[in-house]
Image 1: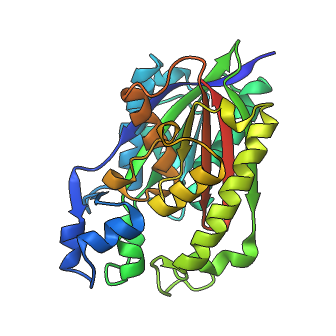
Image 2 (image 1 turned 120 degrees about the horizontal axis):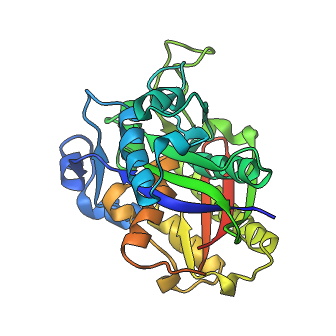
Length: 318
């Protein structure tokens, strides 16, 4: 039996910083207030002459180099994003051209912050059933393009960035389980009202009911994480590193405590980047590897919750 395994990672984060002190001049807030409620100190903003596909390209080059993979050997590209360059064509198609791959399949997937986990599940299936040998999976967001910097409830949270992984056939287990879910009845608790066919000229910035999102996120991350752990035939105590969605430090802490995982088993970098949506766990994974927080044979837990509501958790063996 063939398995699917991550063999390379890459990220791109813009150079431009937006600090909590910078936000004090835009809205009624303070560095102390933001840190206490979110754990965020700064976030990155993409220059206006760049786009989501530019970030994707840089992250993919990193992942390809990290796995010693030639772009011509890639069989498909899957991009998770809610901030594409255009309504159509997809970012993935633009990326296929930028990377100069063969004429492989390429498509985008929109599942909010959970997009990468959804893409991971598709890649796992394609590799394990033999349809693909090597895939590029990307999560990238230009969230500053859909953030209202007059809205204190959202502008303090979000940043821009991209992450990519190469997923390929392996003789040993890699992606052990992926468990997904959704609940569309809460769609308007976290959404962008305008810009779609329903209201093309409407308010095209993120709107969020923070308290309601917080309550659901904590509850769902716990149950969905346990579902993925059980599907991998493991126990919570078998998890070596928990990489949660970097949305809010209070959500991360509440989820970690509910899973009864010690602090040293939880990777956090929200202070540097804020919430980068579908890029979040990819950026965290790459940094955890760079910091030698992961070794061969470790069991890694991802868990993400976001707009839709849509959520997903995955267990990997490194």
